[in-house]
Image 1 (cartoon, one colour):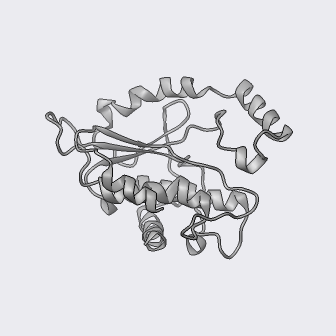
Image 2 (cartoon, rainbow, N blue to C red):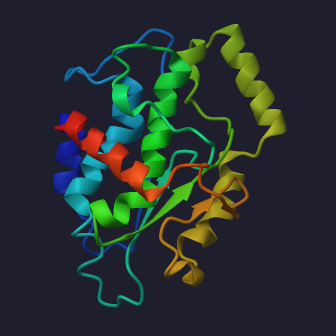
Image 3 (cartoon, rainbow, N blue to C red):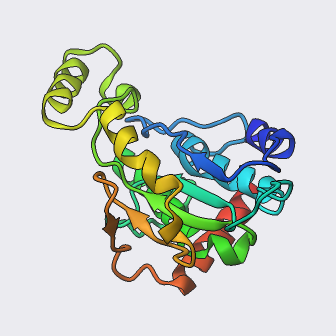
Length: 217
């Protein structure tokens, strides 16, 4: 978490149009922590982004020679999947399962998409839900190199789109002129608009971010 704060402080974003946040892991079977005592998936997949945005949001795009539209923040974290998280146990200290811990990160990222423009004003915020893609994100959960891990990733590789295919679909979305004025819009694995999670309104998003900032502090 200290490194995430440092990155946010030192990252040069003043002439950027877009900040794309994709860093993530998947919770392991047994709860693990960062040196600061934060559950690892929460730290890497969500709180690191929060820490970076706290230091970059007001600086993003401020030195662009041409500023036809506000700078944009895209947050990859599967918004719209119906995950509300456990706002009273963001650090998974009272009850731990890999799925519930990872669910806390999904909800946090959706909260950033919905309420980020008010909590960290300046940019316009958007959410990305790429779906299941063959990457290394499941290695810690399934055991890197294990038979289950290899079979799972092979099946995903056969049935789902590749990272390159998703990037090809996503790239035009990042710079589409029609996004102006649509803060909080979310996009699925084909790059098409999707709905937010049912019940995940602005008030709940602000509550989630407030508890998240308290944990980060």
